[in-house]
Image (cartoon, rainbow, N blue to C red; front, side, top):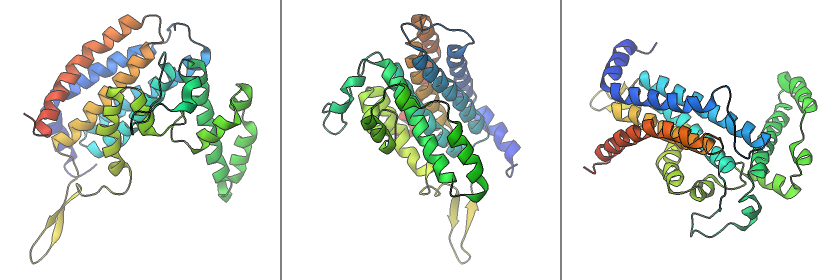
Length: 298
């Protein structure tokens, strides 16, 4: 337990009661997307499997964000929120009916992606090819670790699916994915831009700023310098309310956007989207108020 943790948990619970209530309601609505049985409209097994995996991942991580925020750890919630954003991009890439890929620097069309624009199946396959490439790269790296070498060799031999060969993915695409940071072969910024204004807004508001927390450049919020003859520092074990609320809001909003993309492949799309929208509208309203206050726009 961190120093005075129980007292801080009680204070946070009281001060952010409305926010936690709305976040849990939003979580409930996206959880209903992954009920035990659902039917999809004009979708192949690859698309359904990939989309369900991603939605379950986002739902679980939203629950983790809520738990971290309840104990005052906004910085940890920011890290998970960034992961939710990446899952949302993959979800949208797979589930969107049609896509047109454009460069955020000028808006020009990205030519090599044209074959993907109306092909959900191929986009779903690329998701699994990308995962396979990254997993294989990790295993090959473990061959250099003596204690893990034998295990890694066994895993490499045990691979049951050769995605590129079995699904007709060209060597050109494999090379693109080997160098890419997303399953689309595009940079994160380009994929977010191609998915529309809302996704690109979350890229700018969440993903970019969270890079500092995920990597080593963050640290200024953990201590407060004491000046004077005997300089020192006060330690901050818990975040302020605004630093807790920010990742809570963004994680909920991004998960909901991913959920709407997932709902779009279901036969009951309108009902499921309406279910999410009820919680989402309330969450968006309170987030707008928070951002206006936080960024001094009121």
